Image 1 (spheres, rainbow, N blue to C red):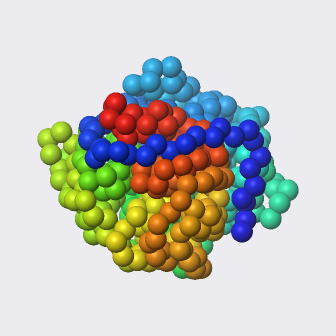
Image 2 (image 1 turned 90 degrees about the vertical axis):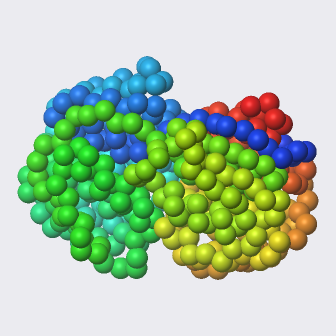
Length: 434
């Protein structure tokens, strides 16, 4: 199993166990996916932009720092409203990607537009994340890139201040972010861009729809009518005000708490229509697992019925949900089978291997396949649960801990990647003090 060795000081934390049904109404932080896309589009726009209710977390602060290093003015002093003023992109600059796939895949195409050298590196585990197809795609477009490894970090982009653009073929079956990175910068390429995907299906299709939707909102002309082909016309991007939705992936553990405890959870501030996130898909999955899901004037509400049901599902389009749904499946009344998520072996850690190993250590009956997991519920016991610096692993352990006393996460601080307040907020929800 790859990438399962801790390399920084850990902060142990015992997941709280629920003694009563949870009942809470929360306004969670903004979406990481939307915040980081909005930052890139704003830095490439022709005028200033604002981001209302952005996510302040490690991944988004690193993205802001990356764009600032290349010359954009990015002010994040106000938690409620960030300001981005575009400026001529210049090097030399250094980009710390942390462990963020969005930064290592969204920023190199921007660096190609930069006059000067831009170096990229990050956490040791980041060097295991798939990057080769993006590097080769940019090279085919004439962008000079120096690498020391086989298509991975660290790397250096030798920006010429412009990218000619044209047509590129890429195998993005490892991550939809490989396509998104190209698309976000494409309007600034001299000839725009045609991206053709060849290979197994691109995972996380809703994230690509989010990218196209946001590009169009910034004034870009994008044609995605042909499957696996995206055509972006050259032209200016418009500075605008971005309203950042609450993060749906970050909400899933809280919704899971309603199922596990037979309680109720409301996510406030959810857009009544036109969400860029796969809310309908999530609603279907939660309903199949026994939840009642409703949109109200207050927000998105999930109610538990007292029973968690097993689920057979292809999660290829919502793979970020796999860890939390796996924890739910451990507590279900029947077996579950999840498929279509082999690509999450290349996320912050090999998530399939890590989930199988850690839950097995707590007494679970779980089988790992090449592209998924099979879970047969049986009583779990407390014990140490390693997160491998992965925020979604921490979320999974917290969900299991609702019903299983004594689950100790070796490092809850990894949740700062997308929700620094998670430990305190989770404890308050579970204990009824939110």
